[in-house]
Picture (cartoon, helix red, strand yellow):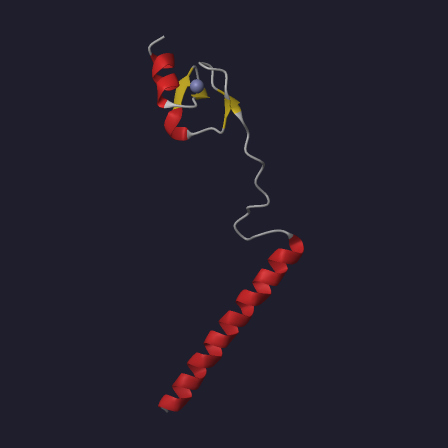
Length: 84
Ligand SMILES: [Zn+2]
């Protein structure tokens, strides 16, 4: 009985490994991942209004002004914008 249980477990593990490989092949062939990485648009750059640098939007360095979110390159620019 134990032998049967171990055998069944082994089959399940092999089946899982097999489907993982199949998934990987399908992902590679279609260029699509289930996480939707390929479907994502390329990162949009925004302009830091203080120093004028184009940066990748960082939610921790942002301020909402007039319904729009303004992003900054650094905490220094953020503070300088706030105190304006
Ligand atoms: Zn800046």
